[in-house]
Image 1 (spheres, rainbow, N blue to C red):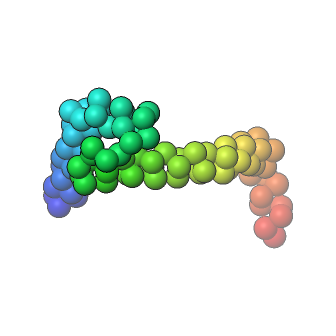
Image 2 (cartoon, rainbow, N blue to C red):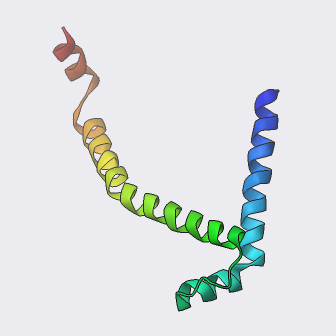
Length: 89
């Protein structure tokens, strides 16, 4: 039961963040394109930093995700149950 409240809370937090981004999308986008952040409030600067850090983490992690998927596919494709039983004994 507590898990449901946690999920609802997380949903509300993320909904609030995305709603704020939607409302201020023009101001933040213009500041990013111009490179002039002096007109942004501290909350808008925090949102800009959050977007930048989130994007960088996703971009940096993507090659490792692809490599993990490739290794997983190779193991699933070429490692049979019989081979695993034979190698473990």
